Image (tube, rainbow, N blue to C red; front, side):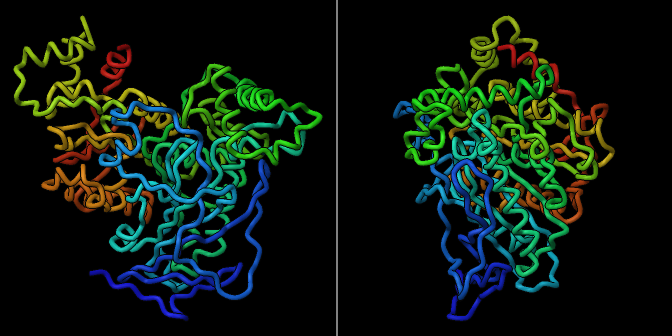
Length: 516
């Protein structure tokens, strides 16, 4: 049974804004719902003012309001709560004033100087929160790795990324204020994390999916310089779009803002009334605007919009900033991502002919070529998993790493999580399935516990590598030595039943599958 301690005067930490009262669970101190700033709608955030007395820090703060849910058939595996067995979700009270962060630490000593990981949640730039996935909980990673874990909420969707800059200076930053919130949180960490035993000069920004994208975008933001020292992007690479200009990119996001204003029935003359429109009305107008413009829906509708001198734009358009040259980067993906849902049961029950026929339904005349390529890259996997090879996140991640490794000699690292989860007869690891392994929270996710024989072993390898990278910018451990990634030598760490480095070029396989 866990032991929790909270007395009238323990544990209390004095920050630059005021005192916080958290609690201790076994050897880990928890401080939840710390307000790091406030923000007016569409405006840059401001630091939380100083307060008198002691504030409670024992419960999570508000999350950002979420966009309207896209309707899913009731029997869809992606419908909430239908997919909560594969990856649990927790929903929480929402409020536009959502700038809160949470901390896990084993030390309340300024001299401890422990590595800090600031975790950015997924959900694209439109949804999710720092607590939506239970395995975001930092207790176990903090306890095992003796690191300080921080995660946070920030503005999302139309509140954080609707570009209204066409309507004047007041809205200059509206298209990236969600990222500005993250910068403010990092400033709070710089100013206060020593009180929680953390080292402000050893901060790793990490995230998965949209959180991984946010981590890489920080490298494109001058105001974030010096606030972090390493980057981990899990299934988070952004669009590869070398054929458009930054002017076209900016205009794209301004057009979405202009169409949203049009749907709301507003004009330049009365644009300021948008500040007071109910959130639900604003969100629905943005969704409608996206549909009328033929843009991707759901969590893919928004991304940060460039602002000169503040956010330069994604690196595939403008290149990496010189100021980030010394930042080590680790980036990778899982085998299945969103392509995992092939519920074919026990693969050993199919004959080779039956397997070929199943694959042929998808790959047609190219089936044999794909099988050949798949066997060369993944000799240990059943060929039916060729249906589950991700062709969205991995090519983008490889493009990102190729450009990054050509830009700087500072080390880049690549990984893939490939072990088969024996749930429902065997599934390729899916989008978000790497999170429990990083945070040592596999036991929180029932589907992963179906592979308990080796899930704990993979968790040990993954979490140790992440901890090593946080500490020294190199994920190598005693049991797993990593080599760096370059375009010429695309080495990657494979996390599976047997872990180790590989340098097989899967470009041709990805192209073949992507075409179908």
